[in-house]
Image 1 (cartoon, rainbow, N blue to C red):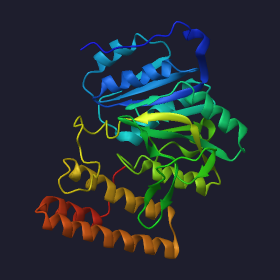
Image 2 (cartoon, rainbow, N blue to C red):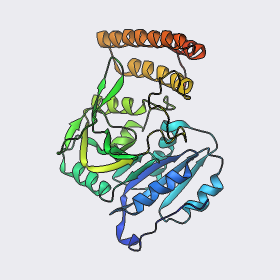
Image 3 (spheres, one colour):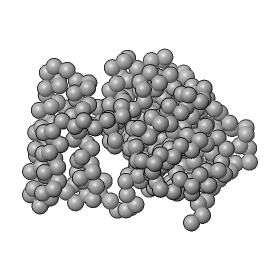
Length: 317
């Protein structure tokens, strides 16, 4: 299948290599190309580092992106997961480019023309403690619906509570989604990127907590807009139940095997004293309840998986 591509006539006038974008492709090249098209149609053109996460068609990826300048392709023979794959891109940028900003972006997104320049202007005009500018994220299939409009982290549930409405002005927020965020390169380098413990899910929760623990701030910028094809990296099913903990969800076991250890690890890494104890108790009660629910639905493997990962110590790195 031939994938449509866009190549603007005034490309060179848009080149802006103080910004680099990291995209991770996993078996959805069409989405990746559409994302790149939207970037190239914008008012500035950053350098793009594309990590192919063991899709098995590295040659096809290479041939498709050869059409575009300013893209570095880093194929991986194994599926590194989200955190490590992004870190691979970050490290290449640290070693080879002199950028001021790195835009972390899901490949199943489309960005508006002014998004990058709006994020850069907002972070430049804000106080020095701002480390990341987060755009407004809308649902691709329903562009009036807001997927992310800022958020705060619930330290008992260890999940972000997303605001699904938007302010008109830039505001500080407690959570930056891993779907899209413009980071200062020097701060991202200081952090070491995402914690490699996380294969999938929750890495943005941990990074947001880490940022704030070091005194950095997250700025939500509603005038910068992207559109997200929700769950695009996980399934091609368009009617998939968005609740990944629903007993009928086809990726339930994968979600449990990652999410339970992730949340336990985040609590252990960042919380202390009574808050840590409360969070651990809340997690235990929550997951025991889920295990019981799965049993009622006859999902015995899901129930066993929940108990297994709740009560064992994960050593994944």
